[in-house]
Amino acid sequence: MNHQNQVRCLFWVFITALIIPVLIPGMLWSEESDTLKIYNSTVTFKHFDYALYADHTMKSYNPDSITDTVFPVQVIENKYLKVTLLPKFGGRILSIIYKPTGHEQLYQNPMGTPYGIGEGNFYYNWLMVYGGIFPTFPEPEHGKTWCLPWKSRISVQSKDEIAVEMSFTDNIARTGAVPGRFTKGKTGITCVATVTVYKDKPYVKLRIKLINPQKKTVNYEYWTCTTLAPGSEPGKTISPPNSEIVVPVRKVKVKDDWWPWMGTVEKRAGGPHIFNYQKLALFSNWADMGIAYAYPDMEKEWWGVINHRNEEGIFRIANNRQYTPGVKFWTWGYRQGSSADPRRFGDARRPYIELWAGNSREFFKNAQMAAGEEKTWDEYYIPTVGLSKVTYANLNALVYLDVMKDRAKNQFNFTAKVFTTRLDEMMNLNLKLTGKKNYDLATKNFVGDPTETSVLSVSKSAGSIAAGKYSYEMILQSATGDILAKAAIPFEIR
Image 1 (cartoon, rainbow, N blue to C red):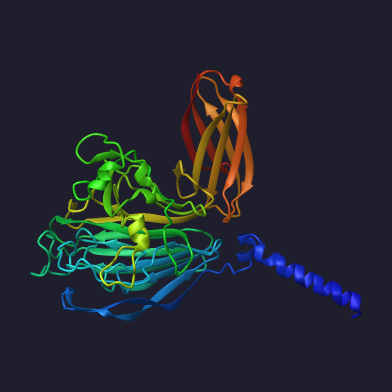
Image 2 (image 1 turned 90 degrees about the vertical axis):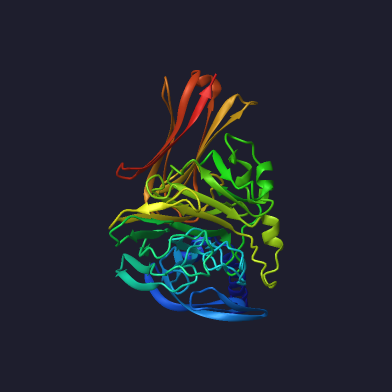
């Protein structure tokens, strides 16, 4: 090779080295195998040292000693997700990494500390947070099983889907060490939590099955606890202050009798403890720890959290009206969580957002299972990219609709943003106004992309729309004409 060719070769090597790091995320991860797989691994949970009695209550602890517990885990991967399951500590989904961004969606505690010891707040009279998504039953708060091993097995393994079943039967009898307000006793209820990952889907399915084998009605509580920190760097999970708790309710019931600050943030909206839900949607407005509940019920199928630092989110889709009408909000407070020292024993404050989905409406409000009854429902957890708000969501797509008036130009700007789970599929997005007169606004064909939201915007002069009330509608269809999602917001021109 002559000198001139050597120079050219070195030049292109240099240019390639500059270009590759700034390629879009999709180009970086798309070369990975799309094979669905499951394998065994381990995780290490660092925490303060402690010892328990046989009934799982606190025997002793050492505030000067930090230890590691190594847990076996199962990891399921497809092209889009890396999902870590931890059956041996509460039957939980510990981690969901969204490969197109490389970011973690769930919170994991960097240092576990026992807290609330002897305060009567939890079933075993203490608690220690690890994180993830996990079932809590049959008692309120974190239930009985958050620190206990669940049985697990691979229930489905094919080229198209892998499912792992984790199960626990409540045969735990109440002891004198249990605080008095935990009254359910030994319910005999079995909870089966089955986690499924599909070869070509960017979401996780969690099927919950509750079984009452007894010949009598049983009082219980069931909640799915989610500790959320979407868009986080793996190993450094946090919710930044501008994270938004996106729950489609207008009112909440808050525990301002416990935390008076909660009664100063929103406007009152009815009876005792009922407030509008606006400012509490922003994590930075949580001045301290607190509890709120969706009021009166959760009727829509979706809720989640968006990290506005990078506009990444995670959303839960489920039949809330029928099965999980209760939604509980909890945070430690942003400043308290972000300023806490994890290495200080007993300081459990952390910067993340907890949302809970319940069979009942509030903690310490019974749900019931009839003799021999079974309850089964599905929860889907979907990472999102590029959405700042959500108007509508289902398993196919999450949608944000917006109308802005440009007074200088006397026109309206209609926008639709769609993040779809139908990846690599051709779809059609159609926008229209329906009312006394109907207007076709715009249409667009696009292919589902895991790295970005599809946007369709159109402007229409105010004079071209007849006065009246309208529905601004979006219809998302497959290439064969099947309707995948429909969303609408009111629009009026005078």
